[in-house]
Length: 234
Image (cartoon, rainbow, N blue to C red; front, side):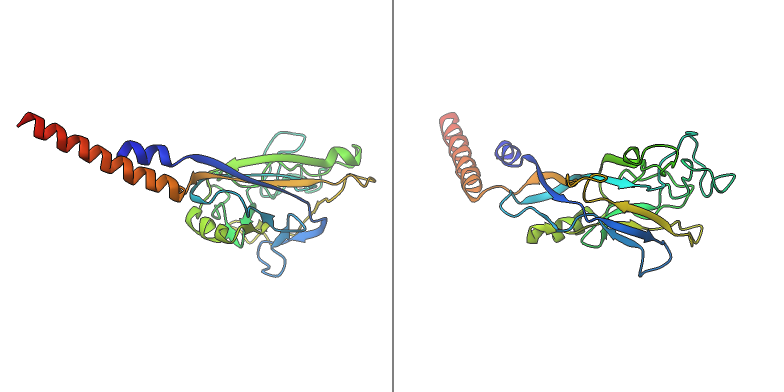
């Protein structure tokens, strides 16, 4: 019986790709009216794909221009602010502040600036350096991790769609009153070539009704065999 259940649950990844939103503005961690930015023009759709019984990891691939969440050219975390306040390419004062939200649910709970970074924080999107060609500032990253609030995300997934946003959480130990201006480009620079984001949700699947029937039949069969073996031993 236990063997049948183990084979019934399988690990599966649901995935969808949508064009990015072309958000061009700013977020501000302590301003509820400006603390989110859309990642795509449409929600991610998973209708027609298998239903998950649990979520074990979330992965987002997206492109951001001038995100200020990378280490910059000096390779050093200058958070909360660069030493000179103006060094282009090293303005990394938003490391650990940008989060992935799905249907308004945080996939990485808010850390303090001294806390270990959660796996789904949107770090690594460097500040744009005006001394380099603009296309080099279009940074694409895939960020994967075990989400916080997995049960709530699973519940939100039941309608087959998830709205993905960048959430500027700031820090719990500073106001983060400064604004972080960045772009979530929908096309390549001076080109009509679209830029897409991909959201992937990995978890265990819900057994199909036929599988559940098989489990029940296997269990009954196993019980019958055990009963026959007991009668033979008597």
